[in-house]
Image 1: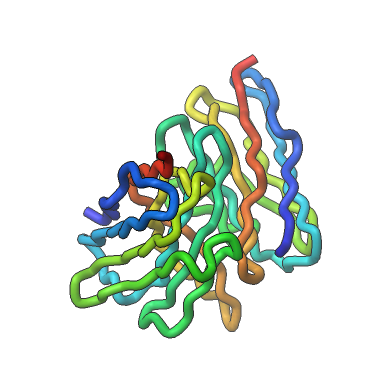
Image 2: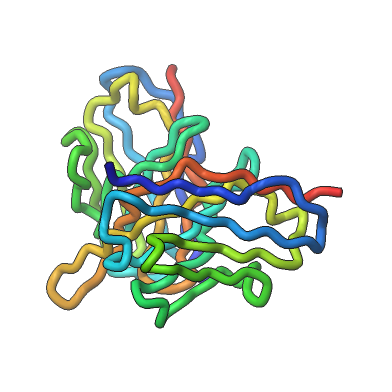
Length: 107
Length: 125
């Protein structure tokens, strides 16, 4: 199975900060990757698919990039509602695998 | 409204069985791949199983192969997960998820765009 490794596991940031989360695949996965946001007690929410395509209704401060093994989720200006845990998910092959998550906390 | 509504979770003893159901009103259920994802208490997300629109392709995570069965009834707009030989490590919230399956030329991309609220499964004696 492809292993997805996110970094950092957690970070503290302030409102207005630029935040970058990285996801690394154990082998090349082209651009077959999505990003999901999860708030406590809630179901996850799709942010990005195909590595860089923004899901409808998601604010443009979220962006994704990368291809092959290295991917990035960027929040250009962190908002109070963005404090959450973020997961990457590879859809290159089965079994699908998630990263372990990155918790974004308030500084 | 497009939504997914899971049911069937609960407390079960190790070795027991449960059947999860997911009702999918509000969209053309038969047009979508469907997925089960789970989350153990305090842990991350884990993909469990996927089923194609007509049930002709099914995939499982290794840890549930031979124990869990994903199925669907397109006439009833419903997805199921039959879970047998349950173990403590199967304890989790189970989410029913729609895959929009974004198509770009010859490429297909998962886009897990609709999630249910989750149903909790606890395996304990």
